[in-house]
Image 1 (tube, helix red, strand yellow):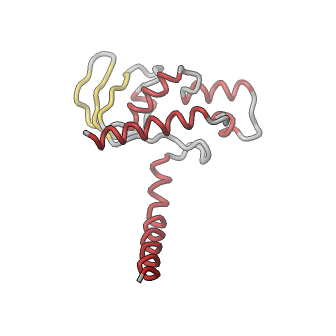
Image 2 (cartoon, rainbow, N blue to C red):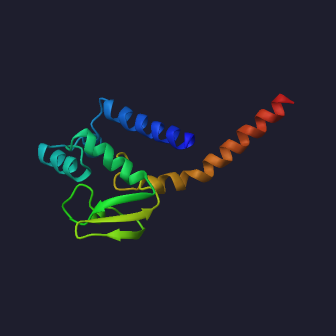
Image 3 (cartoon, rainbow, N blue to C red):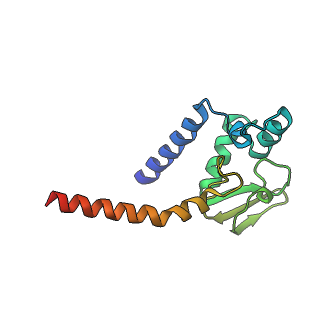
Length: 142
């Protein structure tokens, strides 16, 4: 239970750190080609125009292993807007309860590329770097 509390605290801190940054993610996605209409479309698509409490609940819902999604295609938490594989536990006329891997969403910088695929593609190099660093540290320490 203690580990879960720490993980939940870290996820909450990360969420709010990104929310207090002065950068606007919608503007980051458009670079220099921005206009008001495009900004509004991106804000609607990713929910940046929603209250921060709804954004936070959606974030926690996306990164948890058990999630509740709406079956309404126009809903902010619609299962139809997510590119995830899931196992259905329970379904009503409006909502679905699913088990899934955490959905990390799309990258703001590398547009329309999933964060999970970016992590997977760089994981091998990260492991090589970590093992090399540990090996060098052990050799120097001896």
